Image: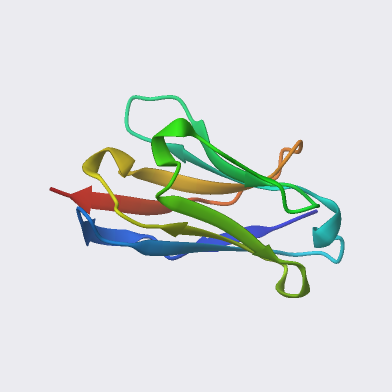
Length: 113
């Protein structure tokens, strides 16, 4: 069983920044890709960014140039640095081990205009 714990969400003004963290249990963190997803009210969950075991990254078009995903295998942690935040980035953000049913509990990000 893998447990994922997200943190770092909050309320921020448009143009501001937040850094989300996801810490995973277990000792095989480095073998997997990890992703950040988000779900806004009334919308389906969508992929925001992902990072493979080889550190190749992928971003949704809506966040390219503003968000950065990174990982530290020694700390079992994946981060999502979010800059130039917009009100449309408001959502619950989830961490997931790619290709699995392991999800975190989510962290709320609210961007005010």
